[in-house]
Amino acid sequence: MTKYIFVTGGVTSSLGKGIIAASLAKLLQERQYKVTIQKLDPYINVDPGTLNPYEHGECYVTDDGAETDLDLGHYERFLNTPTSQENNITTGRIYQSVIEKERQGAYLGKTVQIIPHITDEIKHRIMQLANKGDYDMVITEIGGTVGDIESLPYLETLRQMRHELGNENCLCVHLTLIPYLSAAQELKTKPTQHSVKQLLQAGIQPDILVCRTEYPITDEIRRKLALFCNVDAKSVIEALDAKTIYDVPLLMLKEKLDTRVLKKLKLSTKKKPDLSAWKEFLGRLKNPTHEVSIGLIGKYNELPDAYKSIYESFVHSGAQNECKVKVVPIHSELLEMGGIENKLSGLDGILVAPGFGERGIKGKIRAIQYVRENNIPFFGICLGMQCAVVEFAKNVMGLKTAASTEVNSKTKDPVIHLMVDQKNIMDKGGTMRLGSYKCKVAKGSLAAKAYGKSEINERHRHRYEFNNKYKKKFAKAGMKLTGINPGKELVEIIELENHPYYIGVQFHPELKSTVERPHPLFVSFVKAVLQNKLTNLEK
Ligand code: GLN
Image 1 (cartoon, rainbow, N blue to C red):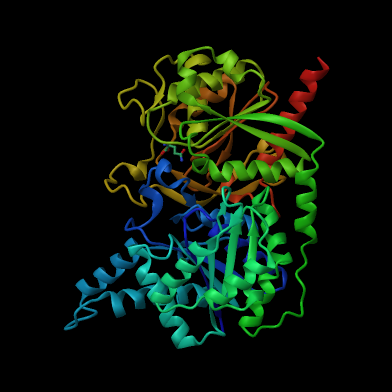
Image 2: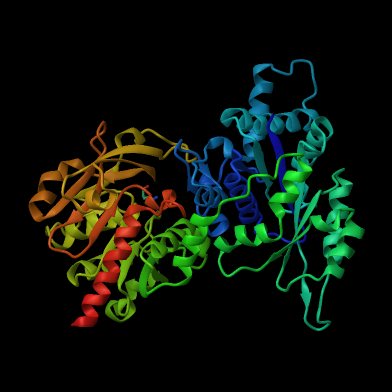
């Protein structure tokens, strides 16, 4: 029978519930339990696909094409197992299906209410995930903080599930903040006491408290928290600020979070977690032999979460190369004001980021021209690849007005245009080309060398594509189309001859990089960037 572990949060948001959930899952996975993580988001959007990255950070896409919360990226990076549509549920989606059922007559004669109809639907979504993967445990992270109006139906579902399944089958781990008051030189437990009171008001006694803190918590604080919050002292877990999120599983192991969880769920603690591979990764991450600087050219740089998976992919691929990757965010709009040489000097490589719309496009194109002409390693992702195509058309092939029709719908040379099956789509939510697609990689190409195989699967999220009418012209001018989707003939990878490293991909490799399996394109890019730096030093 599947056991359920809920992770709730209190006091403030951004305490790292996703990382705690992922770390706990990692420890349980390394004890040979089959575990998955699910995120319940309290907002009304059906999914985060329509949210501005400034608002909500990156939109993470799964193999089955779900547009999801960025926490799912952490789950995959830690567990190295794919997530799916079922791993992320929003209030919008819950209400949508209840209302659809109501229209179909599923509740004929009944008043449709939050309890039981909405809570039943939430329960159904949790159980559905459990049954799908035959999991020993499902960890469900409830977004937001206790006390939010929006979270109430989720907390009520948790209360009901504990009532129905019993405490040894359904657990509540509550993450809270223990703030340090510098004037008083003290860690304070009161906010946590209040937050637990709020949970109690919803009918939930937390089993384990995970206390986020800047300073170690003393035994006295543990005892105090245990007494006031009704948990045993061993179930007060310290979550000290960590240098990297990848330290957190080890910190949780030291605090015995996994043992406490297993004991409460009456499961065996005999098999100890084997974290040797994880520690090896941390060893490489923390002891680099080289350092490189890579410019990340995007337009949402004010919020690094907008490019979360790219940053993390550089952590994985950097460790693999024993090379510290310093990612330097550069606003594409700034590059439109000239002085590009100054702004990009000192960078050993450039990545041009994904994105939507016209803002900042010119800056991206200028940066690509600069790295192409100056033999600086270049990696373009999605919009970054499309900009590379446009730049090449303009500056090498002489098609002066070449553009993507996303930016200029009337251009004479639409080298990037709307995909055929997108032409009649009006709705904005969930309508892009989404999820995993096959791609055939050309023999002898950079991509083939990086992947070490000729057929790959990568995740997509776009509406526009390379215009196949221009295939021959590009090939003749020296741009190689080295990755093609077999059924639809869509161009997925472009490369350049006579350049140390130049690659653009229509898909999102950053979504598939994990600690255990750093993405081959990121690994090969970092390697090339390092090579470029060392060669320049020699000169
Ligand atoms: N805006 C582009 C498209 O829709 C690129 C999207 C992206 O970078 N994810 O095709």
